[in-house]
Amino acid sequence: MIDYQPLIQRWQDSALAPWAELLPAQIARGLAVERYGDLPRWLDALNALPAIVPSRIHLNRARVGADCDPPLAPAALAALEETLQGLHPWRKGPFELFGVHIDTEWRSDWKWQRLQAHIDPLAGRRVLDVGCGSGYHCWRMAGDGAAEVIGIDPTPLFVLQYWALQKYLQQPGVWVLPLGIQHVPPKLAAFDSVFSMGILYHRRSPLDHLQDLKSCLRPGGQLVLETLVIEGPEGATLVPEGRYARMGNVWFLPSGATLLGWLRKLGFVDEALVDVSVTTVEEQRATEWMRFQSLADFLDPTDASRTIEGYPAPRRAIVTARVPG
Ligand SMILES: C[S@@+](CC[C@H](N)C(=O)[O-])C[C@H]1O[C@@H](n2cnc3c(N)ncnc32)[C@H](O)[C@@H]1O
Image 1 (cartoon, rainbow, N blue to C red):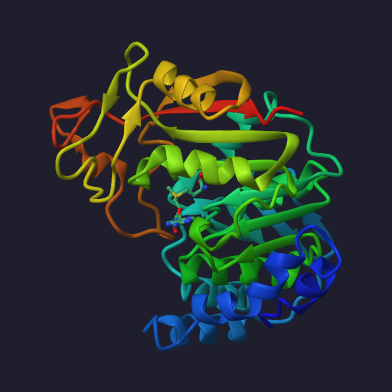
Image 2 (cartoon, helix red, strand yellow):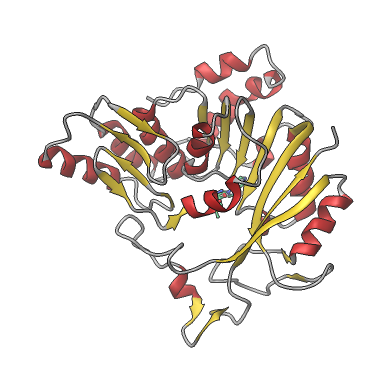
């Protein structure tokens, strides 16, 4: 069921040929059973998904998914739900498959709503979504007409969640690869749009990350970046000591103005801060599809404007910028 050959073949005579050559080994490593002890269990869940022929596919609504005529009988619905639960935790979504609402930890559709009006139209474009999780936004990009969407994420569970969706959505232009940004060959200059959302603060060298994203873009291509920020003037940056909102791997939280300055320094143009939103406990919360702790547990119980460590609570910015054309 997991088959990347069509993509590798398609890329063979394109600007992405150098990457196509590396992909078989990268994919084998990214989904190696020896590296990920839970992988066999997740693969079992994926392989246990029933064959259902969708009547309608929904890529451009909040709950990405499919439905069928006639609707599933209650027993089949319960069986599908149980199998999909085998891929717990579901973090990015929501999805709805044949009546099963996968109510994920995040309302990722809200992020999509915040950025959709501000980005270059995706129709016909080749897009890279770095750190795409289960691929929720990749489906939305395809729904907006992108010709090819390549998501990369090194967490194998999320890649299998993508394959679970792909089993039913059958989109030949949407792919999620089990890789990190460090596996993308340098200087590809092949993508019309590159998204990096929820990644920059996890990178120890944020300017290197921005440079890596730039080298994926063709001249004139657009970067869409979403990351945690703080309030403050240009130059302000928070480097949390220890954890931030219980996350151990958070490095740099710039102010919006600092972030725009970083982009200019790297040679991006047309940089713009298009949205700043404080993350709410309605947008990120525990559900029956993500039964671990979530944002409400990571905030100061007496002051929701602070994290449990005393830092400013999560505030996220969306910026766009372009590589000179
Ligand atoms: C906070 S989530 C963001 C998901 C999605 N982009 C969104 O905005 O909803 C961060 C994602 O980055 C992935 N990630 C971790 N290390 C990465 C790396 N080196 N390269 C690319 N993605 C990475 C994680 O597996 C996780 O799915």
